[in-house]
Image (tube, rainbow, N blue to C red; front, side, top):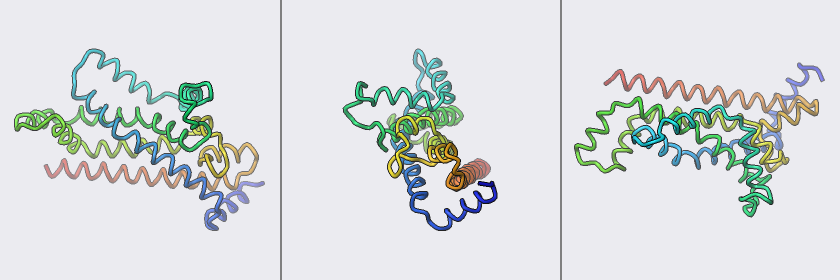
Length: 235
């Protein structure tokens, strides 16, 4: 199949509302969003604590978090596969080759991204903000909420980057999900499968969707950063 024919067929699939194609998109969005949601609260909390509390081994922990950003997702998939297999510690959950397994993998992939971005945002915040809140008698919980509200644009950037990271990964979803049609096939695993079969139309169509999502995420990130600069300018 020539490239121009494949491109025409790809856009025909997109415009026709092909059920199989949009089912793949739905599975990707569902698993990515749920995984990101599960990781958000613990990751943001950890990022805040690492940034604001001094303890022994803190620098080592920061180093490990930053190193985890470059950890191959296929390695995370391998570790999760071993845990979820019948002989693994989490085998009784029966999450292997299911959307639950993919969601678990997406949450693990998102964790270091969210922690690192939150850590960086909190470290960049004015320390007088927390000191003032403590002086006024705020509880530790209230101080944390105050600081996170101040760095909310950085946290939003973390969420956008985390979503981009999980929806575009292929290694973990392939190993843990098994690329089962109608159940665990995601955009990236479907692109890999269709390309290996020499069927480029659906792969290109899904690639267009992925590019559209990437452009949308970057537009949102630019909007967030623009709002942050405007807030800083008004101050």
